[in-house]
Length: 250
Length: 250
Image (cartoon, rainbow over all chains, first blue to last red; front, side, top):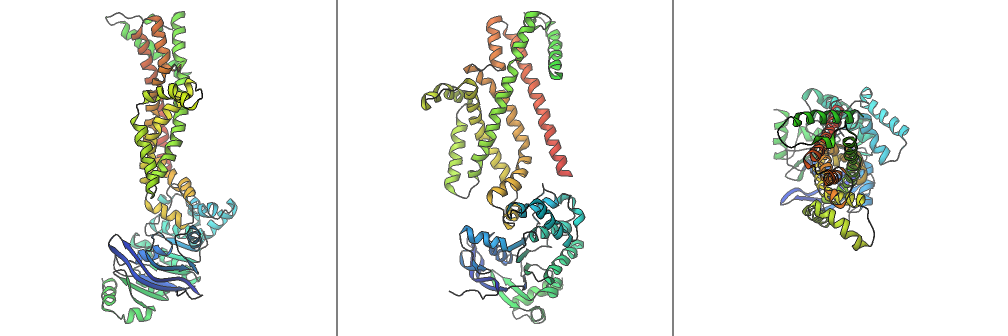
């Protein structure tokens, strides 16, 4: 069996996933190097969310292999725990815990899953809250924050687990337009710091600015993989050209 | 003591009101101004403590058992779900009175132990109520958004931590009105334990009726005792709900 290269943070080989009869992922292979920033785009229903949700097993793939940092994702509890410890995830709907304060949202993982002391957890939380530029909101509840602030809290919550890889599942799609940039700024800053990132997003400005690799998906398949310069200037396939035309000139 | 005074005043007021009606009334049996009436009233009120203790003990147990029964009902595993269904269907099908009789007269024979009336009552009431609690918890937990589980998984929380810190605190807020309902229901159903001789409100009323031959007056006092008790409990539950809603709005 082919194994991922030693510097591959994520390696997917011939991964397929079905929802009933619907084929969400069809024989997908993709390598993400450590430190690489990958932006995945494509029309809705193309399987891009499913792709990254398979990487930390929020969805279970039916065939093929997924390796994260050399660990193969199987049905075992151990590989799952190992992979979830390395991978952070940011959701479209933020999924903050509404009954906990911002600070409690951030410290829950470090306290319970990492067994850190309350002081350590708090310090960690404040450090990342400062990094997403909202330390003053620590004692508020999620509902008291704007959408953009909530998503930044969600990013900080993931970072508190000190992941090696961050997955973003359409992080700005649920935001009002004026709040998109504050989230993208945080993501850009994160990309500059060298974090391995896989982002599903339609923010092509962000993609052009930070992506090392663009991935275009359609009908559960990876149709095109290219560096952004080539991807945007000269897309190879008709489907990709169509898609870019629609989202860049609407 | 404030409640006691209120109850006495309510009684006195009603006595005057009903005393003026046509019919064969004999309020002297519960007239606090006479020595025998006062003794009778004290005897009746003495059951209040047992009614409360019985109901609170039973509901504390049934909430825990109900939760433990609800959890397998939410599993993806068919066998575990089966356990939940069988428990709920069987326990729910047995009338409470029948269960009380069976636990008090039957269980000691089956298990070769002796059970006092109090614990027989607690076991029967708790068992019966636990099936309803299980359904309430299941509905409450199911109402929590899937994203809350996914976010918990993505920060490496295990099942127990996810339930304890993320899902249950939110679910319990939502089912609080239903839990309050069950408490009121429990206070009323505890009157059935009178049949095995538990000295709670109803049993004492029955015993007094046998001595005094004044069912109308004694049972009227009994009705008022339950009424006042349950109005107080309802008010407390509503206050708790309001406090939690206020928490949510912070």
